Amino acid sequence: MPNVAFPTPTPADWRLLAEKALKDRSPESLVHLDADGLAVRPLYAAATGVTPLFAPRPSDADGRAWELRAQVESDDPVEANRQVLAELEGGAASVLLSGAVLADSEPLGRALDGVALELAAVGLDAGLRGPDAANALAVVAKGAPRARLMFHMDPVSAFAATGEAPRTLEEHLTLAANTAARHADAYPEASFFLASGRAAHEAGGSIAQELAFAAANAVALVEAARGAGMSPEAALHGTVLGVAVDQEYFDGVAKVRALRLMWRSICVGYGVELDASIEARSSRRMLSARDPWPNLLRLTAAGFAGAVGGADAVVLDAFTQACGVPDDFGRRQARNTQLVLMEEANLGRADDPAAGSWYLDQRTRELAEAAWAEFLWIQSEGGVVECLRGHLIQPRVARARQTLEAALANGGAHLVGVTKFVDPHPRPAAATPKPVAAPDGGGDACVPMTPIRLPASLEGGGAR
Image (cartoon, rainbow, N blue to C red; front, side, top):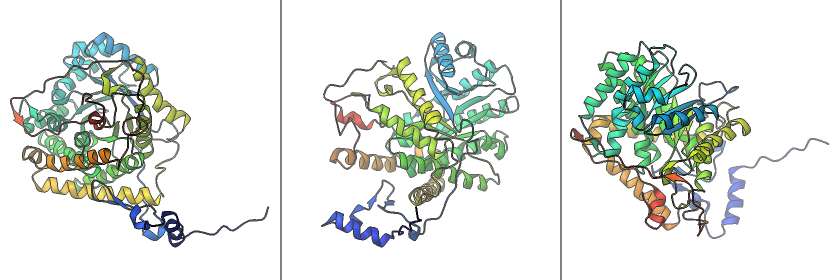
């Protein structure tokens, strides 16, 4: 068969076809602004002057490119241990623990009975009680230098979400930093801090606001660690960045890549060169409770975004998370969703598969620049602690939330099963009601960035 030279279409060719298809509308009508005021265009091409980017994760794409991280939430050490072992035997590489089992080393040790900490990383989700939980985990590890511990201390996010703390936030940061400094020599494989921006996301914030919060959170933790005697390199090396990924998978891919670019700039500011360690967790604000089954689609899209975006670890909620504490089936579905993406879809076989896409490269750069500008504003106002106490961040997040809620209400955005293709008789799904814990107060306070659930107002009064 002879070689056939196909013509290369130009943006002008596209415009002619677009005008014909749109009839009485112009192609400019396809341009829309996101919550950060960034223009999203219908077409990207080399002629738009997109600068190529390459932001891969540092892990080996020939093996498991990202870490499948499972969540275990239980107050009973025996039940927690059963779940932890089931997750690891079922394909998870690491686990995140939350609940009353973190209160002391005795119940935590029972929850981790049979777990080889040198092989399976164990992380904590303890909120403002993070230092106590970290000390308990250090006791359980018995000084094993190769233990893969993830203390995940993140007092800023816990304070932002609840608006209360038993001490001043500076004291909580200092306590976390001193805890990290105390265990750094004994556990060289450990990470100490989680600099997450998810508090802004779950409250309805925009992508730039979430990334800026994560960056400002990281700086606050590193500065506290320096005050505790840690070097900037040690503090940065012990910091994991946290980000949320939702059903908007292209934005999720660009978000993770943008956070990696921002981390490079933060490290340059400290005179250090380190790869970012990014943990992507599925968004909870997108989950429906009345009909949880479409959450499987949203969670799959979120997992895709985290994997293709280059997150080092991906954590997916069970599809019944909005209904309560998930059962074994819900947890298995969360785990198997990642296994399919990893082992059947082979999403980790290419380093930074988004690289070279005019749209994703441009979106990544624009999000990184918008988030960096937001981060610089937070720092100019005294840092994330002062901005939270001074009620400077919260109104900006509230405006982004109002824009998002309005789009869902007027049909500008859709959630399958909630605003579109609603099942009038959804099948029930098993979950245990989740107890509501009262926040610790009496010390510091701010206006909280309360987590929302976008489908709640559209589910006939369902719980938020």
